[in-house]
Image (cartoon, rainbow, N blue to C red; front, top):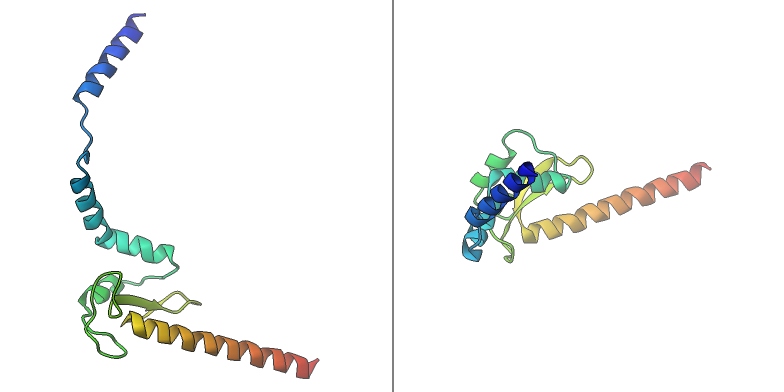
Length: 130
């Protein structure tokens, strides 16, 4: 019985003196913004998306200020045509370039057409051989 009484007294003391580290919504938002801009989060997010990083990719991403394809000045953010994108090969996962969103969309179309052409040539050669 004394164990439970002691336990509950400690629990009450703990709950009365416990403060949430980010009880203030503004502090929580600042913390989340800082975390989402950190190297640790960027690398986690890229790996989650299937990008295979080699040493120096993050530094190259941070140092690049112009698009490798068209030369436009890159912007960090989510809603710009010139936002910074890490372009990677979808088959191997390795980083190719640091480019703007516009060039990324153009490259995606070209990559899709290349893949469709490759598959069509494979289908035609299979039909001719069999």
